[in-house]
Image (cartoon, rainbow, N blue to C red; front, top):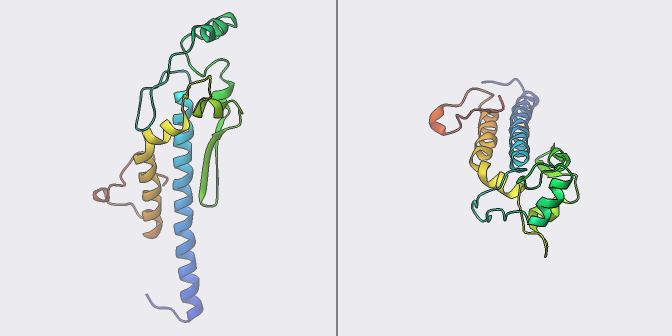
Length: 164
């Protein structure tokens, strides 16, 4: 590849860099969507221990009685109306992705309190999907560096849900 001037070379390099960054951002968005969906799926089901996270403790009988009196589904931790589950969202900006909840009670459930055992949703979602998140972002980065061309499966980035 030849360039007529240093300005042409600089322009070419800038286009390549921007193209690579766009791919990485798409991978980051895909990873955030995956984690949001996984976190939402945790709500309403007892979770087994995974990695550093303990299994969810059963709901107290008094909690189950209160839920039943209000017509909420039995044996479904963190699920009553579905509002807390539906408050889980994601946002990507620049090189950061955030997956979280706008419901202030969610922090108490994630980490527990003196009276409420922890029932983590976000930590377990990331732990369950970490390999796929790494592949999504890795696929996007490598794809961006090679101009958006498909990546050979031998590199380990051949996963469903890749951003391109």
